[in-house]
Length: 217
Image (cartoon, rainbow, N blue to C red; front, top):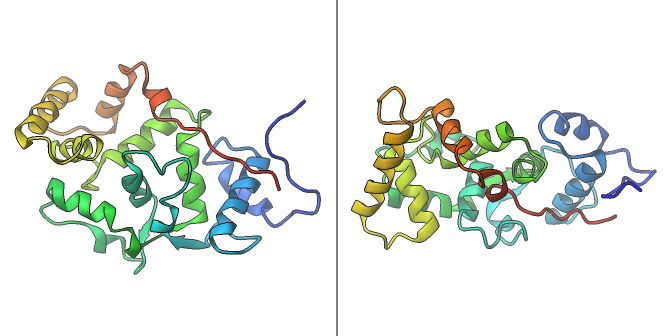
């Protein structure tokens, strides 16, 4: 018999949202309903819309990501400044330290139900390679310039293993990664070059996945 969450017969409020979500994720209608109900709990409500939002730091204890080394970066990537001005969060002359600090400052950012579902959709085991690769590129592009640079890679590793690693060690790893995948020789990776790296990583799909809770209602 079919497994997974189902939708109560009297529930109709989520239907429009599902038509949007089904174009962006591989979640079923029942899964979409369950995730919207989960998000509603952060608002102390029974129902919500895709536009409803909560402060991003309130999702730090989300079971799927609370122990993930990139937890704050994941939440930062799928959230927006409370002011609504995305440009306001762009860091000029970014360093590893300033980029990590920005990701940790989640009290000034909000995440919508829509982005909450998209976030989980990218890490779902059914997501395709292209879905995960696009999400990974966005996640690792700390400087938000549509390229993966030495600064991005250094920041990624610093968040993964800690900032106590020597700068020259991070630089060495970053430069080696760029050297292997930078086809046009401009010392940065575009999305296609980045995908080539991921395709050579046999465990990428598994590493970029986690189990998602779909409570029954």
